[in-house]
Image (cartoon, rainbow, N blue to C red; front, top):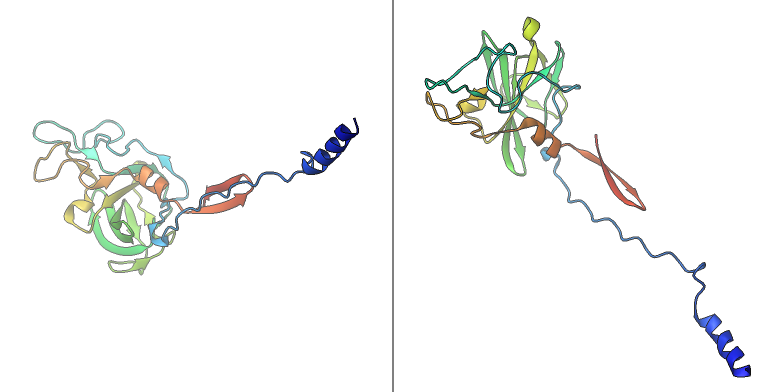
Length: 219
């Protein structure tokens, strides 16, 4: 009996009390790869309410009137997204340089901004806008900088925004493209991508660290 008491006493000193044992260390969250500032994009308007035409929609007015079709009758497809808005300031989606400006009697002004990213050149396209004084081809802009205003188109006032993957060329101006090649134009989507998906994938973030991990919040 004496030996049993002695062994129990020794075991009590060797086996730690679970209530006083330190908690298991929480593994540190994996570090997010650094993203160059040039790869961050924002929406060009403070509000983003879709209009009647989205990326890949048939190119029609909201009342259904076809704007352009091939000889076969195939309706052209929208290269960007139309956003409901009144006349308000338009911001550059990312750091870049104004690469083009064009005036159209129907669609008002169009602007292209050239962005150098780690993945290559990207152009953002803004239709139905008027550039502000001092902003012209060759002017550098910063992400979020106001460079234009939405043009007054009466009941049809809106912003058309598109994202073109590649450097400046004539087709980067197109607000729509045919579903198959026609009239000398390449088939949709050519080098255009869904602007909503692109912006969502390139939004800047703020990292918040806690014991439960890292949370990334859009800014």
